[in-house]
Length: 178
Image (tube, rainbow, N blue to C red; front, side, top):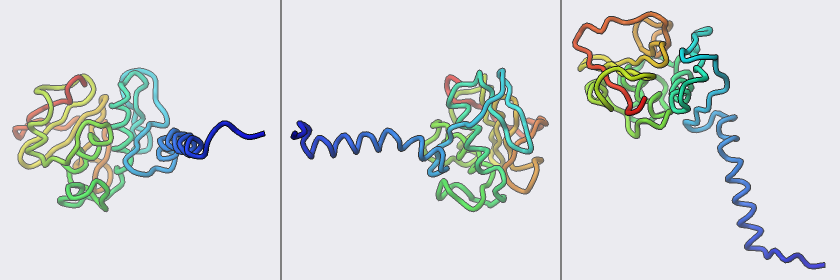
């Protein structure tokens, strides 16, 4: 008995099936900037466990993806200019690290320097993400934890429960709606 599906239709179906599996395979393999969070904690505050932030379950998906992206580079060394020429780098500076994390959440298309981050998004603190920038430094607070390259473990990007002084003329901004 002959099948009623022709070769071109079968090829299209095979391609569609492969594309449907691609996001899950990419997230599992850690390829690209896929930043699907693997676990969450109850509530609206992130939790710090062994230097890694665990996203809150109540956070919007984009916020969870920002946290997952930041976790991916948290052990990278500090590198001046790191993250500005290519999203994947051997190390990251302050603004490169913040840019990478925001990009992972789908909130930034191209890296910004610290001055650019001081003009990013909307003015003031956000409900979930607040970005602090001035001409010399940038960091952000996501779901209650600080992601920074200074006063954190290691010599590059990392998470901290401690608050940073906002003196030094930091401008605080947030992604629209977050």
